[in-house]
Length: 256
Ligand SMILES: Nc1ncnc2c1ncn2[C@@H]1O[C@H](COP(=O)(O)OP(=O)(O)O)[C@@H](O)[C@H]1O
Ligand SMILES: [Mg+2]
Image 1 (tube, helix red, strand yellow):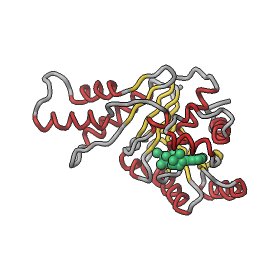
Image 2: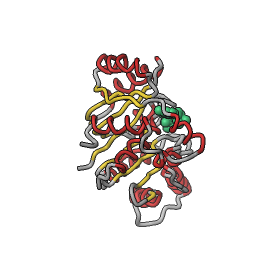
Image 3: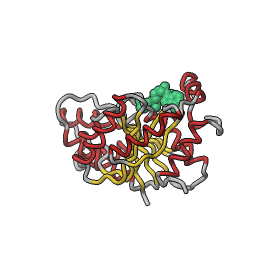
Image 4: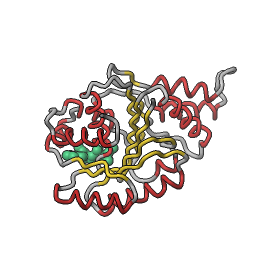
């Protein structure tokens, strides 16, 4: 089994937080699944939330390849795709409990559709090596045109209690159907909703025609860890946000 989960939504709604909480939940439950975390947000900060040092990302090696193509400096006898694939694998951070791939940002000007399509293919291939892949997507809608999350089994769309949060969630859902070849189940996830508004959130999910996965409460531990720059993987296990993430993991079938 190799399950791919993407997390999208408006900026600041809690995508990265949810990614960290879901990973922590999986680790706490001691399932022996191999897990790949993908930071697909160019403004990447998943590494801090997971407490991992990353020195090179995919955007950087893609830029190196573009430069070599422009200067005609490619080694003979190696295809560009093979070279890029080898370099992407070198950026993969392998840890005892999970691996992390940071997509980063590509600085190059102009259309490098070739490089982008090769990257999408490489990412597809890498996810096949893991039982579970969790992708922390770019804010808003851009990732849908880049199609980083082309084949996902579970799409989690996060919203905060704001009309822009819901609007972005609705657009993501609509566009996902337009551009995705393969999207499995789509769920709406709330973050920082007051208890008394969760009914409203469920109703919104129903109106959108997506499943409701649950909601993460505003959690002072999460706030404190963020300010202190500490990893959510060290969050106290009785933290409300963590409990909620466990429920979500069960509801979407990540845990029994
Ligand atoms: N449930 C929560 N409780 C407390 N703080 C939260 C919660 N969810 C998110 N935050 C904080 O809100 C900010 C934005 O969250 P983040 O996960 O980075 O959003 P996104 O990845 O969608 O841009 C961060 O400072 C994060 O610590
Ligand atoms: Mg984020």
